[in-house]
Length: 497
Image (cartoon, rainbow, N blue to C red):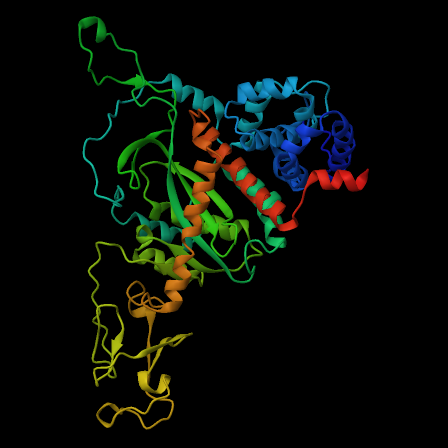
C-alpha cells in the first residue's frame, strides 16, 4: 500500500528548515554539496504518484519513503557512489544525506527497500528473472569473427523492419515494454519540465537524434558450470551452464571494434537542445540492430509526448532503409539520415526537364548546369530553379530554357524514391547544418557513460542497468535546470535567513 506521498513544496520547505541548521554546524560540507542538494531540491516528484500508484495494492503494509529512495539513487550517482548496498549504509549513518533525501521515518530504508522499489518500477516479473538465473542455457562463447570499422551487426531476419513498420502503421505492434514506468517517470517529472523551460528547443518544431550504445554487463560471459566435465579432465567443455545475468547477450561494439557482453542502450535526444538533453531511453538485446529499435522508439515518443511536434529525425546510416523513410512519411517527419556507407547511389529518375543527375543527386539541366535547390514545396516535392536566375544572372542563350524571369522550375517527388530523394537533399546546406546537430546524442551518451559512469554500477540485470541510465539522465536534466536558473541552494538559504 502506498501512502504519505509528500508534496514537493512541503519537501522543499522541510529541507530548507533542516539546512538552516546545517548551515551553522556543517557549512563547509554544505558548500561542497551545494550543486547536489540544488538538483534534488528542484526535482519535483508530484507527477510520479499517478504513474506508480497502480503498482501498489490498496491493502497490506504501507510502503514508505518511495520518493526518498528515488532522490537517494539520483544523489548516489551524482556523488559518484556505485554500490547500492554501500550507499544505503552511508545514508543510514549520515544525517545530512538522510535529510537531503527527504526520508519521513526515523531510520533510513534498508538496501532491500531500494531493490524492491526498482523491481516495482520494472514491469517484468522478478521471480521469472530469478528462475532464468537458476536455469541452465546453452553456452555461447565470444564470437571469433571481427567486423570492419564502424560496421554493425546485420539484422537476423531479412525484411524484419518492413514487417514491423507495417504492424505499426496498422496499430498492431506489440506494446509491452518492461521499462514503461521509468520512461513515463522521465517524461512526466523531468522532460516535461525541461520543455516548459525551453531547454528542448521549439516545442512545435522538435528535432530528435537516435542512436544506440553498448552497455556492458559486469557479469561473466562464461557462466557457472554445472556439469562434471572438470572431474573427467575436460576443462574446455561447451555444456549448458547458469548465468548470473540472463539478460545479457553478445553484441558488436563498432566504436571500440570488439565484442561485448551486455545490452544496447538506445537514446533519443532533443538535438536542438543546447544541453543535449535525452528525452527517451530503451534497453534491448546487444545483438539487435538499431533499425529495429528505431521503429519501437518512434511509436513510443509519439505516445509519451503528444504535446510536442516532432518535425525532424536525425540518424546515422544504420537507419538508412526504405521502411523507415515510409514510416517517417506516415508521421510527417523530415528524415535527415546519412546514406549507408555500402550504398552505391543510382539516380535514374526520368523527367523531361532533367538531363541526368550528378553523383550527389543534383539534377542537371539540358544545358549541363546543375539546378539550384529551392527547398521543399509540399505536396509537389523538392523544388529546383535555374541556377542563373537564382543568382540574379541572365542565362546564356544556349542555356535559356525558359522565358520567365523566375527561370525554369522543376519538382522532384520524393515518392519516386524516398531514400535517394529525401525532402531535404543530402548535399544541401540545410541538410548539412541540421545533420551536424546529430552529435548531440553522442554527447548525451558521453554524459551517461563517462560523466556519471553508469557502467561502474556492477549491474547483472537489464533492470538495474536501465534504472541507472534513467537516474543519470535525470541528473543531466537537473544540471541544465541549475544552469538555466543559475540556482544555488546556499543562496536560497541566505535569502531565507
